[in-house]
Length: 125
Image 1 (cartoon, one colour):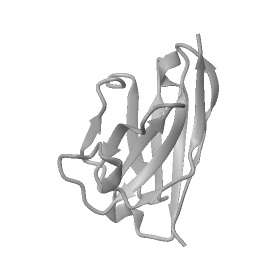
Image 2: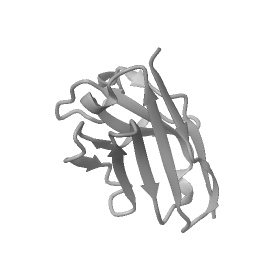
Image 3: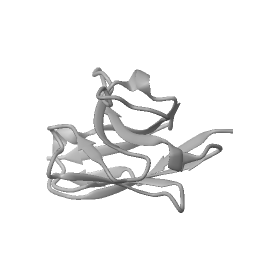
């Protein structure tokens, strides 16, 4: 059974930090591109960051560049998102996702085969 389980969400004040984790099981996660998406109430799911299977390359949405860092530990099948300098507009449900192949459209949710259930991040002003 394929599972992606996110953790680490919570409530924080603006300017604070959180570290999200996503643990994969049931498939060979080290062969997959992985990404973080987020979705705020009433809005579409938005790509935040993605990382290659080896961890060598990363891409970020403009809204989080310089504040968020995506990383992975293939030895423990775990994906991370370090979020610093959080803003109220970062408030959303955060999801991890896995894709066997990604082209230039890494930000398209339809490119991903596996999804987690999400972890809530709330940033207060």
